[in-house]
Image (cartoon, rainbow over all chains, first blue to last red; front, side, top):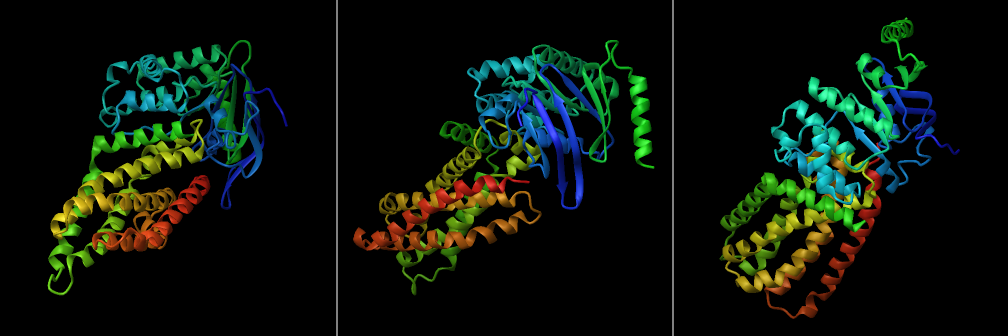
Length: 241
Length: 223
């Protein structure tokens, strides 16, 4: 199957033993679009993100990024950036060394300057030469985001990126993500914060028990966060009987 | 692929240089093991030249295992391995990078262990170090290639400390046997032709292990 979408999932499913973490998920995400994904703990959001990133093998269906299977095509993975629950950083290395390492692996032509720019955009340039283990949780999160952005991905997968960030960090991240979206990047954003998620989103979905229970496209007037939250709560209540 | 492997190896060495925890542990273990064998040695019944090769390779095997365990330990912390898996590099490059870093690590331990062996067991220093260094390098290649593979398999298990030696040791046997036989002949001043069959076995196992482990490695990363 071919598709021009940045991310295209068809009947995607993932089971861990007898537990079905993701089931029958279909979605398409075009360039410059942002899908905000909400849902309670254990709904399958992180598993879905890891499936899209190619870190997990689907048990059913398929997912392609820019019409490529991430698990089979190593060079194509340069299109993807991932911000996960865990920082994915090496604690004994400095922030700069971590981001530079990611830039080198991503094939960036000038990794040193790209790392400097990425850290500066997240407002952690002043701690670039500090070992990650000596940074606060929020600073580590910013470095982790810089690591994911440094090679200029066109598909960005974000799992609770606002977690641990203070106001300035959250504002810097929103500004970076909005700018990336304007430049054509596709964002898949998993968050518990409905207001933050909807502010960036062109599409929003609620995941319950491994499947999309509620999907909305941003109306011209913008999302109504209160109405969406009410729908989310109602769905969660209905599904839990 | 080699460029990516080198980037990963440099990162691993930078992490080790910054912490030195694994290197110091392995180095101290090596020196303590050599010294313990020395104190348990009855020089009147066993000549040092007969004992030293066995002591060296037993110590080297367990010291190597201790160091290899840390190879993927740093990746498991904060799921740094995900950063490698999502990077646009072949899985084989990750394996080769890890193996190169481990080889440098084991090599650095041997740089200290070989002179220490010569001094403790009254062996000629230059002959021991210069003669055994190439054998040690070949043994290290075999040990590291197998150990790196099994380290990646064991890291996510609850019994990683137990699983790594259990998986690795059977594969280390041909390496240890060949290395002991070669070093015994070299230290005894026997002609090189006597060691050649064992040297060929060592090289053959190195080649098989490097190729087989590189091919098998991507499958150890499947969740």
